[in-house]
Amino acid sequence: MSRLPSRWDGVEQRVPESLTDLRGPATGKVALPGHLGWSGLTEYDLVNPLLRMSLYRTVITGGGRSDAESYLNADLLLADWPTLRRGIGPSYRRAWETKITALGREALAPGRPR
Image (cartoon, rainbow, N blue to C red; front, side):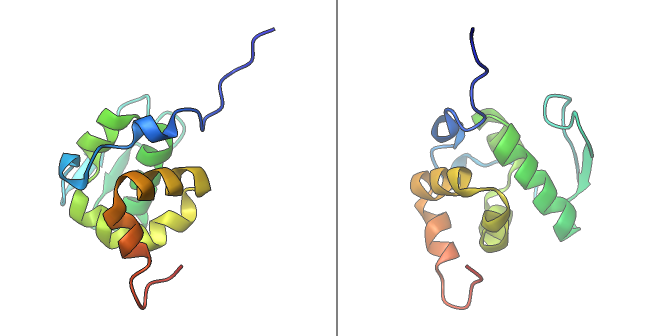
C-alpha cells in the first residue's frame, strides 16, 4: 500500500534562493489561484496586516517556489517575518531561515518577538 507524501517533504526546495527572487506586489489586492486558495479566502488586501500574513502563510505552507516568487514581496516578508515565523511551523521556519539568512537575522534582531 502506498502512502501519501508528507506535506513537509521537500520544503527546502520550495524556498526561493534569495529575497531578490520575491517579486510579489507591495500594495493592492492579491487574488490567489485555485491551487492555493482552494479552502478559504482567495483575495487578500495587502494593506491589512492580518490578511497579508494569512496570504503569506498560505503561500509559504501550500505553494511552491514559483508561487513564493510571484506572490511574496521581499520588503513585506522581512517586516512581517518576526511575527509570521511563529505561525508557520518549525519545518517551514527552519527552511526559510536557513536558505534566506536575512530572515533569521531579522527574527533575532533586538526588540523583536521570538
